Length: 261
Image (cartoon, rainbow, N blue to C red):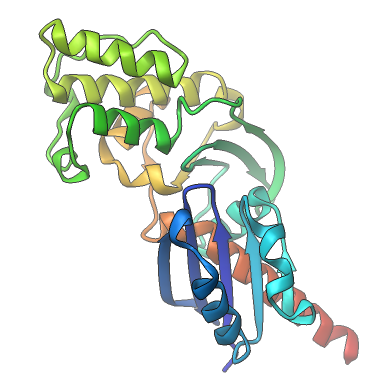
């Protein structure tokens, strides 16, 4: 039975997904700074027993020569995001992808054809890295957010559009008497507004939310409140693009088979 590996070499983490027909059978995530030669060698050796390798993400070009070029396919993060979303058989018209250091808003139509897309500007604000900075500043853990009820908090407004200045603003507000919970809710609200209000035309209709930041449920809730509708977060939201990369090389191989026939 054919198996394919998808590797999403992101700026913060390297995500790997193995698919077999219509199933995800294995996933793995490694911090980019820990993704060294040993990990690359391990994946290269593992790929020899598979039908193909799909590469996407920030570091895709740097990994390309580590694998057999005949069974390797390199695709953009936009294409990978759409293919990964299509794999879930969910009919959506918009995709919100918030990763470690960038945000992508993608409009799709007519069977997951890319209609339009927009990337965030060169700033950490509105990304997973921004959330990490604030959590560290407030001495909070990811687990602290599980029971955060944004409807019961009186969060202030975060006015800074720069991640560095916003972090300073959050600390000043902490000194002003706001609780950590109110401040992190305010941060999620500012991210949601930045993502939604500047991209409203691209995310009309059913929306899927993917990327590492999709794991923050308070952020999902703020996006839903500002968007005015439910937003779907898939089980493999962190590995969506890795799955899409694996699917891309699988489709490439199937096309080759058809040509041979």
